Length: 236
Length: 92
Image 1 (cartoon, rainbow over the protein chains, first blue to last red):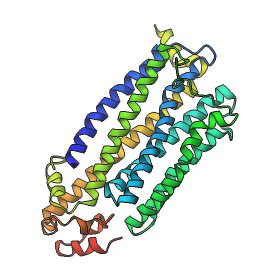
Image 2 (image 1 turned 120 degrees about the vertical axis):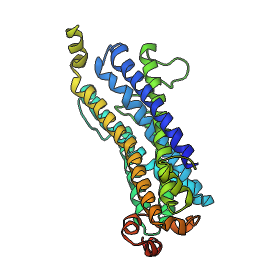
Image 3 (image 1 turned 180 degrees about the vertical axis):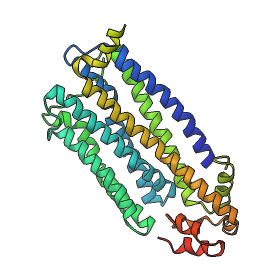
Image 4 (image 1 turned 135 degrees about the vertical axis):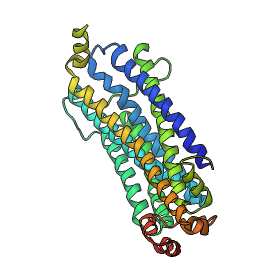
């Protein structure tokens, strides 16, 4: 299982690299400029997928942590632990690129608006999970405490998603997932979809690498770990 | 040709915002991708070193004892073959 995860992670990593390249070229060079925002809108191609992945990573984290909590699945804890730093990274990307987009568009890097604030709360949830999971000496009770935090934090996801509808905010509403026709030009839309795919594939690749590391660390004294070490990431 | 390249990098006057966005995302994603790979390389090297001394064979198949031995690596590599198991079990 360890070898399989590592092998697939490598393949998916290359696939993600290809998609990132295609999406970036499409987004920066091929797509036309926006008639209102000019070229600043090109930040969309990294901002929207990063923001989406931050929520997706949290949903995966909470599901895995919940499974670890309820069924005492070790794999659940391992997946949840693997999600946390990655999710925090996506959230950070979404916040930084959002600020860099907000400055030319809204005239400010930051505003305490519902969407921005709830996304910041998401960052703290990821960091809180990581801190709590590592804080307790007993790894299993640490995982349990962190899982409770993760499950409570799930209420933040619908708040982030619907914040642009529930409150009057500076942040615009969804333009891609709108039912019927998306309110965006096809030449703009295709690179965006490629970037979404790239971020998703990248997420799975890094997750597999992290989980396989976690397994290796946990079972380092077993025979298969020794064999993997001898074959340098070989079979198991 | 050169003009259009310069124009591309100017990003319609939004160069700072666009390029730093992509730069930050690239840096963060590369770091996140590299971290588990580096950790795995270190782990495999440690396991290989332990195997050469023969303590992995002694503990072969006993994964449960090692489950709580997070971070015991540094101690285990320094300890001798006979005390390595004890060190792993007492480590936090």
